[in-house]
Each structure stands twice: as structure tokens, then as C-alpha cells.
Image (cartoon, rainbow, N blue to C red; front, top):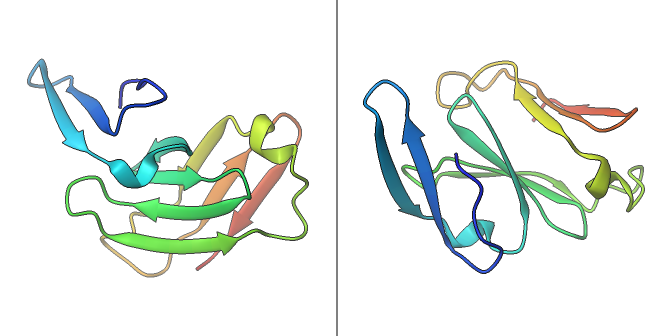
Amino acid sequence: MLPKKKSATTCKFQSLTKGKLCELDLSETEGKMCLSSLGWLLTVSKDLNFSLIHPLNHARIELLDGHPNLPPAFLEAIRKFVLSSSPSWTSNYIVMVHGFSSLAFCRP
């Protein structure tokens, strides 16, 4: 996924194998931090609501709703997101989010 403008609801994806750009309407990511892993997007709102979104079929999985153990500064610290397996393939997966010196994970 290529970086998007802050006000844009359309995201661009680059296919390295086909050498093409594809644009998708992802209005559900507007105003949120957005990271990707295994074809899924992790969105994080300013109030630390975490969701997984599949960009092609818009499937949505709510993960955490304002988790009380995460400080508000965790949003600025988030650098990477990894899924252990794709939720499209199995319901047994782990979501991991890495910040500067923090690691948060959950098993939905």
C-alpha cells in the first residue's frame, strides 16, 4: 500500500509482480493510522480503537476498543504490525503491534 494524502479516502496499491497501480476506496481508513500485513489493514483511531479491514471485500474485524492498558502516546509509537496468519484462512491468529519499545498483541 502506498502512502495516502491525509484527506484522501482512496488508497493506492502497487502490484510488484504485475507492475501496476490499483486504487481502492477505503473511506473506513480516513483519519486513522493504517498498516498492512498478509493482505489485511490494521486501522488505529486516535482513541486507540483497533480494527482489521480487508481492502478487497471490506470485511471488518473489531479488535480493541480504547484499550485501557495502552497509553495515548502508544499511537505515535506504532511502527509495525504483523499477523501470525491471515484471518481469511483461519480464526486462530495473533495480531502483534510494535512501537518504539513496546509490543502489544491479542488473539481475537
